[in-house]
Image 1 (cartoon, protein in one colour):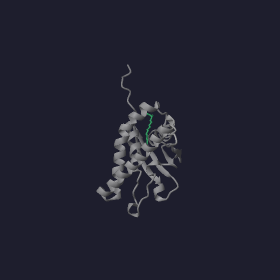
Image 2: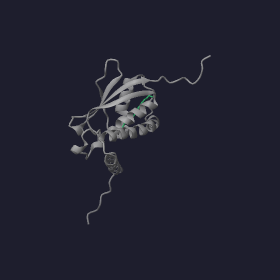
Image 3: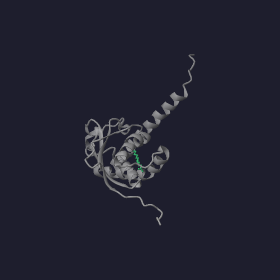
Image 4: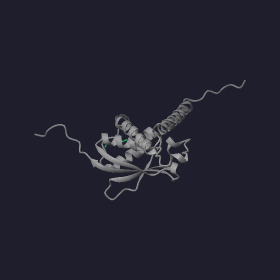
Length: 185
Ligand code: MYR
């Protein structure tokens, strides 16, 4: 019998990561499928996914700040870069590019060429109008709200609708200045 060569720790770890990622992708798909069955209307599914994401985002920000060691961003441009390069990498395993800034630096696009949420996904014609990845917009909105930024987030491009990338438009609506907890004398 041929001897079985032991796999290195790195190879085992990479395999575990791949399996975890696939499990995550398939679990998300099962959630979306169940929502479609339960809610019937794709508009309702979009809303529900966004709300689920928001509920995740308002909690995930603590983990993000603790693990990333990111300090306060000087402006919204830096915040967008942090989301795209650090946040997406941490929770989705990919990075996004930040493009299409408006003149006053309050709206930009986050562009994902690669999105593990949609591996193995093909939408039937009955799901036209579904924003399959709407959980992501909710996560970002929720996380930013916890650091005093009210945002509006919309999908501009979606590969499941035949576009060449995923593009999220992030608009800063209001930045609530954080109060200094002590009175100056
Ligand atoms: C600051 O307080 O100025 C730093 C703000 C950083 C906000 C980062 C939010 C991370 C959101 C992660 C989204 C991941 C989506 C998969």
